[in-house]
Amino acid sequence: MSTQQPVLVTGAAGFIGFHVAQALLARGERVLGIDNLNDYYDPRLKEARLALLARAPGFGFRRADIADHEAMLPIAEGADAPDRIVHLAAQAGVRYSLVNPYAYVTANVMGQVVMQELARRLPGLRHFVYASSSSVYGGNSKLPFSVEDRTDTPVSLYAATKKADELIAHAYAHLYAIPSTGLRFFTVYGPWGRPDMAAYLFASAMTEGREITVYNNGEMRRDFTYIDDIVAGVLAVLDRPPPCPNSGAPARVYNIGNNRSEPLMRYIGLLEEALGVRARIRFAPKLAADVVATFADIEAIRADAGFAPTTPIDVGVPRFVAWFKDFHSVS
Image 1 (cartoon, rainbow, N blue to C red):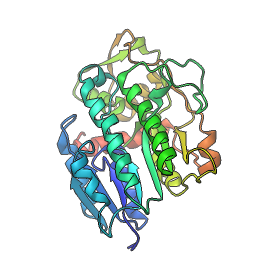
Image 2: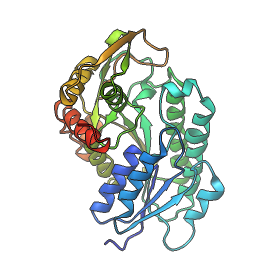
Image 3: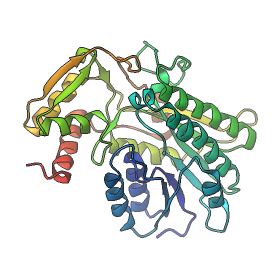
C-alpha cells in the first residue's frame, strides 16, 4: 500500500468515479471518495458500487455535497490532505437539464467553484483533473470535434455549465497556478453504467418488453467510449500535470473518446444481438437539446498522454450486456 497522500475522487459512487477509484486502488493508491448519493437515479446502484470500493484497503469515504463549502473545505486541513484531485461529481444528463435547471447550476457551477477553492488551499496539490463533456461543442457541425474548435454555442444548459467549468478552471489556474486538466468525455458506457444512459436505458426496456424511444428517427451518431478506455485515459492524464508556463495558465483541455462515430442504430443492433431480444422502437423527432453526431479528435491526448482506446462497440456492448444480465439476474 502506498504511503503517499490520497487522491480525492468526487462522484466516487457514480459510474466513472467508481471505475477511476477502483483503478487507483488497484495500482496501490489511497483514495478518498466523495459523493452525496443523491436520488437522480436509484441510490442502490451507487451503494452497490461503494460496497465494492469499501472492500479495498486504502479507500476512505465521506458523504458530502461538493457544492457545500462548509463540508468540503476542511478536507484541506491536516497532514493527510490529498495531493491530487479527480473531480467527476456533477449533475449529469442533457435532457434532465430541461426539467431541473437549478440542479445543474448548483452541482456543476457552484460545485466547480468549491472544488477550486479546495484545490487552492492544498499547498501540495500536484494536479486538478475535472470532467467536462463533449456537449460543449453544441451546435458545431464540423467533425471530428477538435479541442481547438469554438465551444460558445451550447444547445443545453448542461453543456453551458460544463463550458463554465472549463472557464472557471482556467481562471483558477491563472490566479493560483493550479495545474488543471479538463476532460471532454464522449458517450461513456460499460458495466456499472448509469440507468439514464442509452445502453442501460435500452437494455432495461428491451428485457422488460417495453418500447424504446429513438430520436431524430434514428439518424444519430455517437462516439461511444468504453469505460476501461476512459479510465486508462484519466489515469494517464492524472500522472502528467501541465507544466507551469512563464506566462499564461497551467491549464489544458482534452477530448477523451473512442475516435469513431458510430450510428445509433448499429449500437442498438449490437444490444439486440447480445440480449437476444428484438427492440420495439418508437421513432421520434430530434429534441432541441440533442446534437445529431459526436466524434472525438483525440490527437492531443494521444500525443501528450499516450491515450489509445482499444475497445470498439462490437466488444464493449457485449461486455456491458454480460454485466447487466448478471446484475439484474436476466437469463
